[in-house]
Image 1 (cartoon, rainbow, N blue to C red):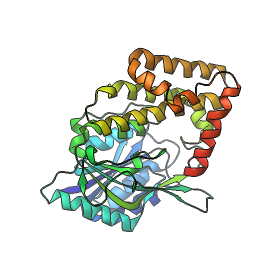
Image 2: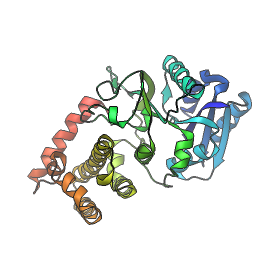
Image 3: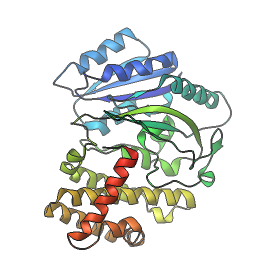
Image 4: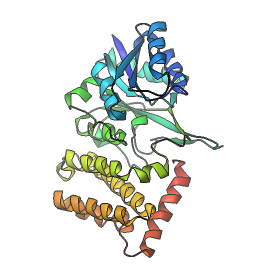
Length: 339
């Protein structure tokens, strides 16, 4: 029995995937490392995946597929996962060994205990290249520590404090039961990975350790601001998909409903700010269409988001009105250290 399955989506990742895999090997036989070669053509990604499968039989598995994008690589990992819990670690990121051991110890107590745990949450660190100070995203103000809790026990999420793919480990069975399948050839699907299963999560546990190390610094990263603007259609597509999964205004659990509305609010805000920063009238039309899409789909949610603080900020009239959301965005950038 495998305690944890870790999927590593790899696309032309020869330069850094070894560091990621090596950081996960201390999990030993309780962990399976699923190295998903997503149709790499420019380097030795596939060969390296096969090398680790040969050298660590029963721990590392190489999965080769035609290129389907990050989402399809995650899907492949989930389809092949045999572990009770499931985690995604991107090939240019890594995990902290001491925190990793605490993570496994915690998961073990639930697997061999009487309680069922749906989602384990831990901290992640922005490993921004060249930054002297590493920003840690923790959830001490939002989540109870050291106990199983439900949505009713959640405290207050601060502005910019969201549960991301880097933070979560889901029960594998839960992901399969809620039919999670990420779209192919689409960027920014990590938002869907975190968001879509949430109404199915009944029990959670927050472990206050800095487990995931999220590297930021490569020019070709999908979170590079210039690349995000160039892929604004992808961001908008993911946002529309998330808007369509649930009518969040009808979710009965108040705190879950509030959190999911806030998540959609930030998705709408990011799409809007990217359009504004692009200084492209075509993208501004896409922004307007996105807000009209929400209005037609869910008027109640539209009114909540459009006339909230951020909704008003990104929809101020005229060119002068575009300076305010950009200023807010830059302040958030400096504080959290992303992009």
